[in-house]
Each structure stands twice: as structure tokens, then as C-alpha cells.
Length: 160
Length: 160
DNA sequence: TTCCATTATGTAACCAGTTACACAAATATA
DNA sequence: TATATTTGTGTAACTGGTTACATAATGGAA
Image (cartoon, rainbow over all chains, first blue to last red; front, side, top):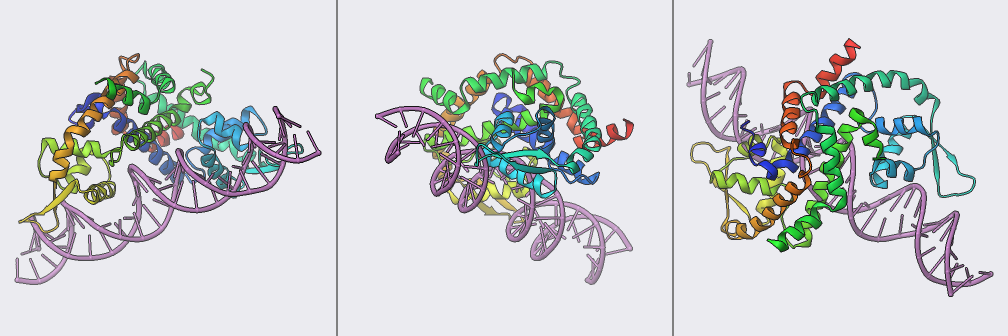
């Protein structure tokens, strides 16, 4: 408990969240690399989306994951490059990319899933001493959605 | 509660943490820009470190904030560029950059602090419905430090 | 005292996200 | 039906982090 950010209390919270999510990101990348899977940290979520729905557009994915569309464009093109996604032209709308899993993706999925299962266990271990963490994270997200950091801080500044 | 990542439970946790910390990052940057402060999101922490100790090296900062030294090199050079940091040669060790706040930094600090205070209030608001959040975050960090995602997942995979 | 290991910093290349802008296709409206 | 708006995707430039490598200065040990 001598960590500077922790000592700062609420002032260090944003930094700690960034640090944690960065650690997760790099450690996940490292994991995939070390077991020889050529997939990126977030492809996981994209694959899962395709289990719910066979065809998705860039926009569908970006809305479901709450990420900007250019981010999805990048992810999707790397997934295509590796041969996990293909697109089918939409007959009614020439702008759309109707994306689907390839056969390669489908055949690899069972292997991927074993690794993702292990990852889920890890996340359960990480919060095993923090029984309220997931729920309280939802509350934080809700607050943020209601009014974001910039707006809140601006108001707090004017009030102070 | 129809958010895909939330529905995923533990499987969506890493993504949610990334999303939250990204939102904080961009919103903070946006805030600074909109109030006309030419400082980056993490300079804050560096300024605070200099309140505890007048002189610091790159390594000191990188250890205190738990960030890689190249990250600090970048932050420090932008802070120098903007005239907030200067360095004094160490008489005993020619490798070291002994960094100090400039007069400009000291004179600006009171203004900065008002904004940071407003930011602290914001963070308090964000966790106001989550009384265990900070404490439980510490537990998560402790777990992670003990054994990181990669190692844990690797073990979980072998065991499964 | 010379040589080896360590430390402090710097640099390059990469990565995963963002905002801002562009533009064609589709849709709605005057 | 012509035009204005909205939608879907793409691209460029930026940011804040990382790892891997390089190098010079220091310190320790043979």
C-alpha cells in the first residue's frame, strides 16, 4: 500500500484504471503470442458477436462494442487479412459490408474457446476478493453515461 | 443493462475497464482543451510528485507511477517543451537528468490545482454509488501483481 | 586497474484506440 | 423529381502507452 496512485485516493483512480486495463491488454497479447494464436486482444468480442448473429456490418459491431467505427474498421481488416472474416455484398445497400465468419474461423473457434475459457477463469480469480466489483463497475459506467468527466468537472469547477 | 460487454459477465470485464479508462482519458483531454490548459492527462501526476520531492529523475518518476521509462521520457520532454520542467546536471552522475519544476510551472500550479480539485470531485461522484470500489480495485491490483493475466490463464488452460 | 555487470536514459517500431474529414449511397422532403 | 439530409465506410493524423534495442556512465570484482 505504498503505491503513489493508491495513496492519492480518488485523484489516482483514473490512472489506476488505465494502468490495470493496459496491463490486461499487454498481458493478453503476450498470452496469445506465447500460445501461438494469431489473434488480437479484442477479436474475441467480435467472434462472440458472430455467435449471436451470422451477419454483421461494421456499424453493428461498433455499436455493440461501443467503440468508434474506425476502430472496428481496423480490427475487421486485420481479421480479414488473417482469413477469419469475409464479406458478402448487401443486395439492397451497396455501402454495407455484410461480414461473416469464414470456414477457417469456424474450424478454429473450438480451440480459441478453450483459451477464452481459461481467460474467464482468470478474470474470476482477479475479482474473487471483490464480490461487488462487477456490480459497482456498472454503477460507475452509469454515472459516466449520465454525464461524462468533462461536463461534470466543468460544473464542479464553476461551482467551486 | 443491454450492453453486450456487461452481459458477458467476467468475459467482458477487461473490455469494460478499457472502455472506461479510455473514456476518462479522452474526456480529460477534452476538458483541458476546452478550458485552455496546455497540459496532458498524466502531467497531473508528475506535478504532484514534484510536490513531495523537489528533484526527480526519469527513473524516479517511472517507478513512482509504475510506467515504463520511455513513457516518462515522452511525458517529460513534452513538459519541457511547454516550459514546465527543467533539468539540472547531477554532479556525481553524468547520466542522470535531475528534473525540477520551472518558475512558470510553480506560478501556474495554483490555477491547475483548481481544475484538479474539480476533477477529484468528479471522481467522487462517479464512485458515489459504489462504496467498495476503490478498496476492491486494490484487491484486483494485488491479485494481478501476484500473478498476471498471462501466467494465470496459462495455468488455467493447462488445468482445464 | 582493467573488465564486466548494472543503471539511466534515449530511440525506433508497434499497437489500439481516438477525432476529424471525405464521399458515395440511400432516404426523406419540398 | 430534384435536392437536402442521413447513413455506412474509409482514411489521415494524433495520442499515450508498450517492448526491444542501443549506448554511455557508473560501480564492483578479479
